[in-house]
Every structure is written in structure tokens, then in C-alpha cells.
Length: 159
Image (cartoon, rainbow, N blue to C red; front, side, top):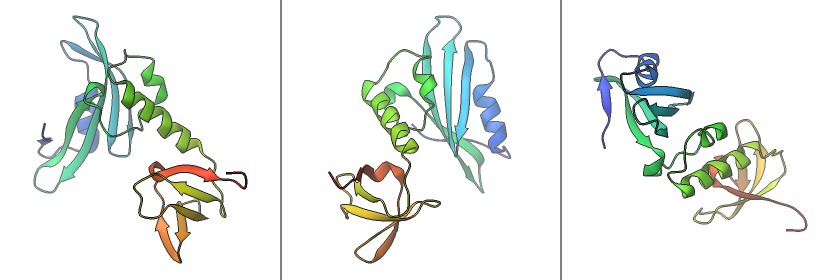
């Protein structure tokens, strides 16, 4: 699946096009987090509901555009609002677990000095938080930007 662009369109135009009611599809909810548009759509004929994920992007040549996915495709994006999970039937349980884990990490209250264990696959196993906004950490004398998706756990004295 590729990208669809609309010449001279703005981000707002693309969002309006993707969420407007059509002959067969109705948008029940939508929200945009950065350049990821989350939707809950309903087929007006069958009543089928699904969660949509649209990656939004711009090009100097082509204007704004989008790449569309739905839950059943297991998009590797997890910022979907938790409330949307109750609005559509489960199409990909693994993706839903990823969404729930994302929100747990997003609510994690970190403070300067916390030691954070990183997920398997990261080149460094642990960092010490040096800044919360933006989230940064230090390990082996180097400072790193710390995306929350790489955090496995906050290390306590008992861990």
C-alpha cells in the first residue's frame, strides 16, 4: 500500500477528507496525534466498525497526503486513544496490547535521576534520566534522546 497525495492540500484538508461522511462510511470518532490520524469508522450498510490509522505527510512536489491502514493490518503505531478500543470489535489482539502498553508508558512519571531499563534490542541496557522535557538520559558518559517506546521499566533499589 502506498501513499495518496493531493496537490495544494493542507494537513487540515486531508483530515477533513478522511473524516467526512460518505455514502457508505461514517466516521464515529477521530483524533490526530502528531502526523498520525486515528479514526473509528462505520460501514453504513453493514454496520461494521473498525479503527483506522492514517499516516500523514507532506511533499514539496505533491502537497499533503496519507497512507491508510486499519487495525487488522497491525500498524506499528500505538498512540490510538484507549476509548477507541471499545468502539470497534477486536481485529488484532496483539496490536491492542501494544496500544495498552503504549499508554502505560505514556503515563509513567519519570524524574531526573531515575534509572530506566531499556527494551531488548537497544544498544545500551540502561540510562539515567537527565531531563524530562525533552526526555533524555545518560549512559557511559553519553547523552541520549529517550523515546518512551524504548523504556522497559524504571529500576528501583529492589529490582
